[in-house]
Length: 383
Ligand SMILES: *Cc1c(COP(=O)(O)O)cnc(C)c1O
Image (tube, rainbow, N blue to C red):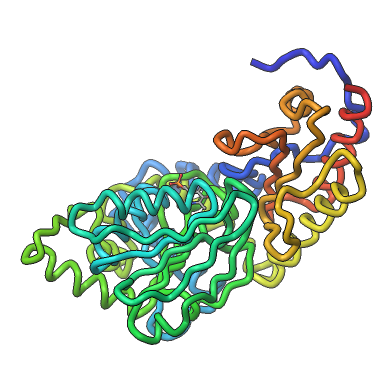
């Protein structure tokens, strides 16, 4: 329930759009218009069979659009399925890790994937390279590890890691899986440096959640085929819902194994094509970097605020985290902002810091980020 603001932010300071969440994130008006058009009874897509051309065409638009956005090298392909990035951790655990995984863990999301492989009874204990929140852990090639996993943008802390890691291990046949859930489409990447670059629709792509998307290298496709073919003999159970080979086969036919959320596909296709029309990855990463520059520069110029991530090179340009002086009640600041329609700048709940966290995704106008900082100034001054 909205609380009555006790402190009033002048409307001249407010951003045009107050959605700064780190996911689900701002959905643009033209995406919503596309959704309305998809429900038009004259040419309906919503409420029609997902096995018919209209919906298959949506999946094709998403796959082709992503292939263009990421400039897919020969042999790389886009797979998708239901269940979000969280489901993809189990897909990877079941179908990609041969015997042993190594995980870089520097926040909640990397930790959750590490927990997934640790729980798999058919795998050897996973190796974990851990670093404190606000810093970045790097992978390190180790004999016996066949799958490496890291996070491009750790949404829980606002730290980002390089995607080019362990190249020698990859040359030796190991796979590198990159959780790009909140980075894909907004951070530079050469997918050649990765074997699986996976993400969801509800962060950079401003859609709803519920799907996973994965850019897979030929080595990853081959690994899944090998692991799944040998599963039974190895005493490993690969449920069909988690089969990457099945997902790849469905995706090649512009389908999903089971019914997808068609509305999510509409929002996603619209956003992928919007990003391409604006100038693709170069445009979106520059726009996010501009927003991030405004946010971090503002914090550094205040003696009561500072970027949580100390290393400027590791500061995320898509999710900015700003610590406030202990004398300032960050939840109260977040509450006043919320009462004015400036939404979701609370920190990741388990991080437990006196912090603001700001989604700087490409849908967010850098001018709105500047307006947000002016609002915070006003609130802190009058609290
Ligand atoms: C949001 C997020 C996830 C979880 O995505 P779901 O679609 O909710 O499963 C995983 N990894 C990162 C880095 C995220 O930001």
